[in-house]
Structures are given as structure tokens and as C-alpha cells.
Image (cartoon, rainbow, N blue to C red):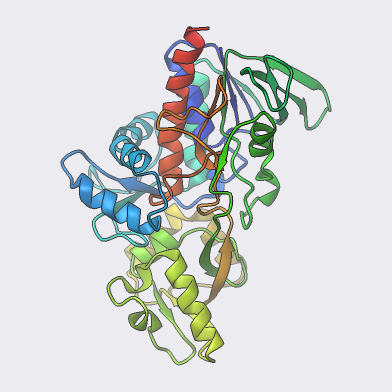
Length: 390
């Protein structure tokens, strides 16, 4: 009934939803689900919203962070729905950082009203989601790379609809043909700067474009800042949310001169431009300073950023003691565009639905995992109803 392509948070959410509703569901991923892609190495950051909070304040923050390029209907849908998705993941066994029964909440980049909460790293979260996909009865095919979409008229671009996909086993070379009533593309983006760049090669986006799907925002790139030793390192939201500072070579907290309202929690583009100016004007290098953080905060950051802290450890960096050199970086996994989708995650080609990093990312004003999880859930439900009508 439903074929899901891609095994990150969006793909798992789509498969869980479609299978839960009763669809015979297959999830195909070119890496092992739960051990590959962006989600497994992502910072453990998720938007915290509950229905009694100021929705319009959250939406205003999101629009500013997305530079007013986002689809505000999509953004509002993500903010509304993320509350239930967070509770679902909590129920399934995702480990969140809590104080008693309450989720720990901190502001992130560009946030005045919005707040983030934190889970214990992408690996633990994705292990739980894989388990829930299996518990709902969906079939997982690991290490199976989908290369093209099948169309009802055999044409690319099609005047008909998408009716499945073809791919091959990356270890045995065996070919696979999927005939599907509905296909959900959740294969991630083309991923410049990811920790696992080989996982994010844009295959799904290219297949959708060949089949005739409209693309949107492909001219958009973002910039961010990262450790000079690891230019793709995740963790800016939680690190700055817990109070990390940026210092220039003179020991000055230079963000006071560029964004006095939010300082180090300014949007990524502002951080990158400010840091570049400091370096250009001879006040570099620039450093992140976490030496003033409490032991409790550093322990929490270790739990929610396991990959980041293992990398620091490998370099002999102790954040309680050392400064870390940072620099501006291209953020290809930012608002980089993709397959155009509506609020229900339909693409412009019948039978094809899309979620997460493969989509046009019109929820870019909220943390990426949040938008991908909500879109995945929505796409799985929409695909189920479409398949039921075939």
C-alpha cells in the first residue's frame, strides 16, 4: 500500500503512521535504519510547544528565524503538531532530559518566545523509532538504495502518477521493483557539511525531479558556525541555549556589537557574518567559551550531544577548561530547498508524497528534526488515505 523511501526521523514517522492506520507498509533505506543518515548524528534538540503556550509568539519567532521565506501555514502546522509527536516519542521510549516529570526547556538560536527540549542523542532516538516501525508491523529493508520512481505511463516526467520505485541492494547488487499505491519520499537532502555526507547525496530529490515533481527553494543556502576542527559539528542550539559565549582573540564577547538582544543566540546567518567580520578585521581567531557553565549543564550537554563530545574528547578538549576555535561554515543542510509540498505533504505529482530534508523545508524556522517528524507523520497519514482510494 505505502512505500517509504528513507529511514531517518521523517521516514520512520511516515512508516509508523501508515502502518498504524492499517496500510501494508515497506520502508527502504540505503543505510541501516537507526544507524545512518542525518537524524542519527543530529543534535538532540526538539521544539517544545504545548497548547497553553503563545502560538503566535512561537510563529513570530519561527518566521524571523526563517527570514520570512517559510510557508507560514506549514510552520504553524509543525508548531501545533510537535507537542503530540514529542509525547508519542516519550511514550515509545525516547530518553528526554527532564527535571522530575518536566522536560528541560531552553531557548535556541533566534528564539525569544520559543523553547527547545532535548533528547539523549540521535542514535538513541532513532533506535527507538526503528523499534516502533517494527512494532507497528511495517517491513524494513536495510541497505537498499532506491534510484528511480516508477510512473503509470512509463514517462519521466510523467503525465500520470507515481506507482512505486526501483532500487538495488548496496551489498549484493540485487535489483528490486516496488509496486506501491502511494510512495513517501523521505530520503534526506543533498547534505553539504553533514557528519555522514555519503548518506545525503540527493538521490531522492533527483528521482522526484526526473518524475516531474516541482522543486522549490533550491537556490537557498544557509551559513552557520562550527568548530574549525569539525566544520559539520552539530550542537549550536543546545550549546548557546545553555549559555556558551563567543570570544574574539582579544577576549571580547563580540556579539554584543552585532546582535545585543540575543548575543550568541542570534540566528545562524548573523553569527556567521559577525564571526567572519571579526576574523576579517584582525580580531580572530574566534572561540566558543563554555568554561563558566555549571557541571550539571555540561553533563546534560554530554547526554544530548554524544557525537560532539566524543569528538572533543578525541581532540583532548575539555569544555570545562578549554576554549574551542570556531569559524563560519556553509550550512548546506539548512534551508536548502527540495521537493515542493503542500500542508498535507502532497507533491505536484499524483501518488508521490514527501517529508523531511527531501522536501522544500518550508518549516526552516524550527529545529529540523521537529519539522521532519511532523511532516513524516502527516505524509504517512495522507499516503494511507490516498492508497485506500486506489
